[in-house]
Length: 574
Image (cartoon, rainbow, N blue to C red; front, side):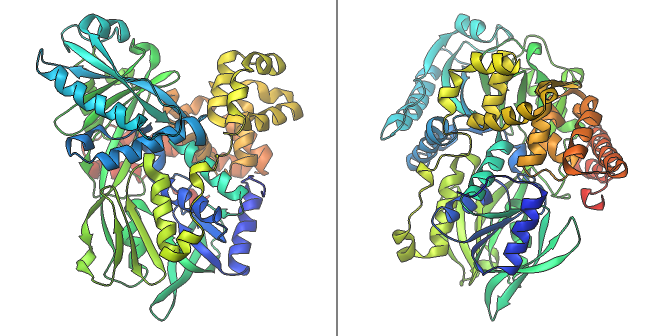
């Protein structure tokens, strides 16, 4: 394997090799969960692979999800047993084989609101859900569901209103650190030889006759443009799918609609409970999800027609989530309880293809579609985080063609992600790690659940410099070494990259984590060689971004929120 290190130098080297080296077999456009999965699938089949992303890794949709790995209970109502089984088996792989450090079991309560008739109905559905997860699974699985009386609900979730439900069914799904999953996929792919670069925007597609043979890109950090030649280009650009396809000068391709979902973050002590809740609203499903020291509550599902690069939560969005959570909470939440919020756009795949173009060949599932828009350009859209690996496999199979795909099949169902190998033994050594570095067991578990066995990289930084073992003064849930790790090994280019992707400080710390901004900036400056002027500019940009998001959260609608968010300057201007 090559190095899994991502840093400014590895980025520059990757761009040089993509521009000046032999043509790639596959160039992936888009560094979200799907694109990252495609890059790993392609490179582990022996294909010369590159991946470019216009923002940061997971910068579009993938870092703003509900952070769940699940089978999709709603598809059982549609009797789509194959789809649910596939998703559940992917859930099990992530939980117990591919990424056990990032994906964790989490129990939920499914409310029973009516006596007598509803419990058998719900039990049948969730019982089938559990059965599909176990049947044919080659790995361990989570417990079967349990029935709870009203008293049992109160014991599991003391903050529930006494009359909110007559009982519940307790079942298990998975939660995931979505942004770190994407980053881990990229690092794993880099370790097998993939060339990876963020802040690299595709501005055109290279063509030989009607066929796409590469892409014209611009390095947004320097403004330099260059060409990358590739035998196949795979566009995994989510809500930007149609814009990417338009670069091929075609009226065909997939159709995608953006739908906004927002979540709020509430301190863990504000709600008493050890399980999550799944609640039905008139517009969406509302999850109340327990995390380490907070709750994530969401989501909404509304059409979005503003700037798709920077969706934000409005006051109406936040009030909607609070209102529906308060239906079941005995002590109602208020805006003062919300320490953070975030918004993301779901790329909802629309039926058919643009203009019903007959030349587009497709492979369709209920959740995602792969299409060759023009020769050499493949689009993949739809799907969900849980099944990213299947989506990636389908896209690379499609790029290779049926016969070649059979000769070099996907191996990602057995390819451990960075940090997975050796993770479980380390969970038995928490006390030893605590004693060596002076960390509390909670800090060690926090680090293991973010880095897995790559906690050794954190340890190496502390061995090099002892003060990095200390918690951040303004955000003590994180240690200083994590900031240096982000710069040295995880591809950070800007201060905001740390707060929004490498950590969750932008929404899991009060006031966007601004209490830690100077300390974080100084650690990055030392590692990345920023001068005083650059450091101040990065701090100013993150403060402006935070202020713009706060202003947006006071607006009544998406139009006003987008205008407020636009006040923050682009990172590309730094």
